[in-house]
Length: 410
Image (cartoon, rainbow, N blue to C red; front, side, top):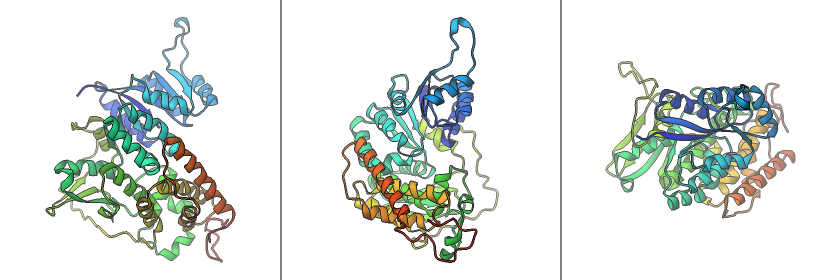
């Protein structure tokens, strides 16, 4: 395989740091053109020192000054060998479409990575997709562009990456069902009525994965699995009713595909994100990866069960939004992000995350966004609407008499 040159959107996050570890393990095959980060300037400075990108992009001008102060200063006529330092959304787009990079790892959390990823798709870059919001918020627009420009978009999320691998076992028209697995999160066995009293600390205690705060809460509500259903629809062209979620606490089987003859192909691997990241970078080839192998000599048990849609209503809302189409899933995502932030701030209780999302969907008009700019406008309007729902106490946040350990009520 020829070497690849990467732009990494979200280099200081979990996917970004694991991507750089894959680069570190394969320096003869990968080089880094640009690193795009948020506020973790200290880590970005260390990444620059190790990987020598040509460009580094941060959030705003003040972060550029902070970063410059951390980078080495040498003589050599004022030349340091440091990268060009840029900031802001336009700079993210600039490095994503630059001819020097042939591959973009899209791992910025939220819609902040949408425009840069979309423009990279239009330029025909290979996309390693680890940003759920790209397809949840703008699936029709993005996938139309993928088809129009012949772009290779390889999913990095373990479930979609697993599905991508399972679909190599047969022709797409032979596949009848896609099964996505969910760990069940920290409240898999918690009674529904006890969810009124869980705290952010409780919800952040994920049993399997170590992730950022928002995605961890989304895993606790099963909204994250709902987003994955929406993504899977756009990536693999399965109808909503042909995408099934099953709870699998061991998180070893990541996805399964059922074929029309009754055969089910499962993708099984250790819970190490470097494997799907490397797969996205090297597809269709497979290389040795520095990840744990499953020891089949050890006794093991795998459990599978249907999700509880009554206890976790956000999963059902995700299916409903996908069926509705248009901007519904964009609104779903925006409202969820606002509601999760309010829960983490102690402003609403855990079950009220779903109530805020449902009420926001009710209040927002149905629209068919025709551009990325329109998607971003809908996203902002939905966020504003969700905040109004919270501030107006338009939902019941928790029952009266909540114990002191419960999150504060709005």
